[in-house]
Length: 349
Figure 1: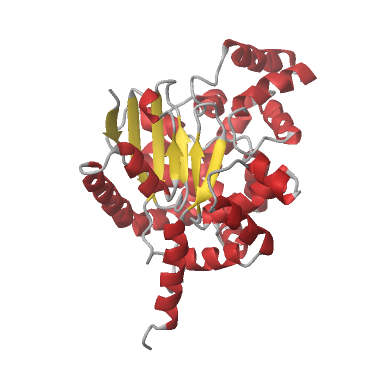
Figure 2: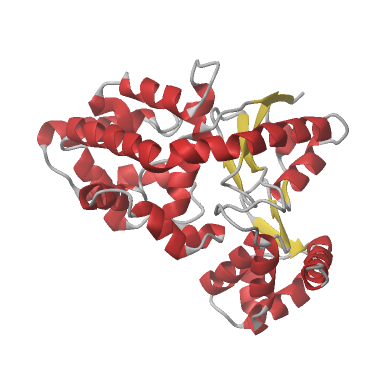
């Protein structure tokens, strides 16, 4: 029987937010605002992060498994500082990723001070479960790290401390009440909903076919992931779900309230190809490759459109036991977009 557990800590959002400000388009964040946050780093620090962000993991499983009662950002950074510099990067990866072959390759690079094409292919296996494939140049950048992991570890800790000082310390205070409320709301839902339904609600439309195969499922709230969801497997029979808890009336960007989901929904609908995709999805669940054939488009183009609609909450995605993604229309999201638009138009001044 699957056991449901809960975790909590602002450190999850610390690392998620660092990823989001480097990939604002994936999360519906205004690029100019994200660039403004990145500009708080020195040019050297900014370049370091830009070089590392695509191989640097969002270490959700690492945070989850730390023996800390309180997982706020400062405690996590203190723990990271206690790890020898040369081991800091590799410690953030899941233990299941660090196969004997990967560890042997890392040692070989460090000892020989050489990088071969075979080394790169082994390191690439660290990222084989990514939704977005890693580029060869990013694998090469990672391999270079292992020529001098001590220096990288020192620079990594410093730049994370700077990020906390110049941005996230204040952000942590802002989002903490929402995180606490999100945890309480989810726990109340869990008391009355079967887990598959709970997951679909918390994720705005994600279903897992093999959900009952896990012995342990841990849920933890995040402000910055909203409206998306992060999955991780701390162990093969465990599932960590970092779900978005930002309410409809809360903005990712501080300031005057803007109905972000409505804006993203209208943008997603304002495209003839996406309207055709919604038409086909309304007929039943289907795969990106099937849609590509019907629309006579390349599969990556269709996936781009589906990701845009997923960000707006307009589609449901089912992850099958064989790793396939099947998409269908979320009619309630279409209705909700119409409701939000009416609310904005008819708001009394």
